Length: 412
Ligand code: ATP
Ligand code: MG
Image 1 (cartoon, protein in one colour):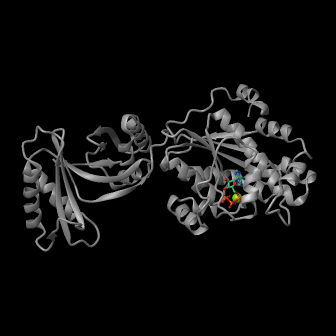
Image 2 (cartoon, rainbow, N blue to C red; image 1 turned 180 degrees about the vertical axis):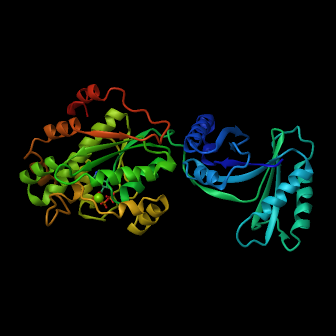
């Protein structure tokens, strides 16, 4: 009987030398987690690949698709598994080539042997399978350099795996291999994309959302939850923090010159996010800022907000155009959610003319016009969170309450 399995390919992990098995095990665990609730049966390492099996013995397309969205996966192939018997693997090759979609004219066979207990040499396997395919597809050509399709025949651990079609994965590194980050997460287009980009590089992401509650409704908070759900296939998010910011924004807006309000909101947001990062053991903050996109994203304003924190701030979209970001948001399935209007802290108490090139002395003067330390404390004390069972390597802080007081501003 011919079975169908998923073969998962990863390149970057191969570069990691001694850490290779840690990376492979992490990827294995993440794939298992991504496939929970499906007909997934088991997954294991096999000669430079991961092998994923379905309980029906015939892995469906949907399984390959779900795997392809897991960071660390370079490519996924639906492969036929057969005994090391030339009739069987030739039949599988004909079937695999016949299933290749699109317009193709040429092919070649690439046979490989990773187990020496199979007698036939790979050159011989190439010839056997090549002749079977030429007979089955007489109008197609065999080309050695750059054929349209490659038929892979891989003898390994007592079985032969055969596949022709292979789909791209998202690439990157397994989540949980690059530490943790806290991501400033609005319900707009940019920050979910920025969060995903850092997650794809192996970071566990902890989004923090500042809502306008109680001065606005909580609809932006629901959108943020929907966005986190949309990112679920990549398994990057552990927990979403929500900070009701409306009242404090009102206090700021009454205390400081109108044009500097946004900068003050953002300085507070950064300070609070850094406090959460320290509690969570996160090593960096992430924002969806893109240079010059809006008033708060000029170099001067980025600088004056950045001085609030000592952790590195990652801005994966800093050089991206809005169209590129939107394209990615469409692919991720976040665009439609982000396009819904919801008042959040960004729409609250907005100045008519925000400062685009803030002068440090003016900002520092305005900063002293309200009790910012107390405000940060109060916001941390009122924060809420929602856990998502998406990311198997996410570990929440053990004792949130007592950890707050350990984090006096002076230690930051
Ligand atoms: P986005 O589309 O991500 O909302 P934006 O184009 O609206 O970005 P800004 O409002 O200037 O730009 O926000 C810049 C960045 O600041 C966002 O990408 C996000 O990282 C952070 N940010 C903005 N609003 C919030 C919020 N309400 N809560 C948490 N972080 C926020
Ligand atoms: Mg925004």
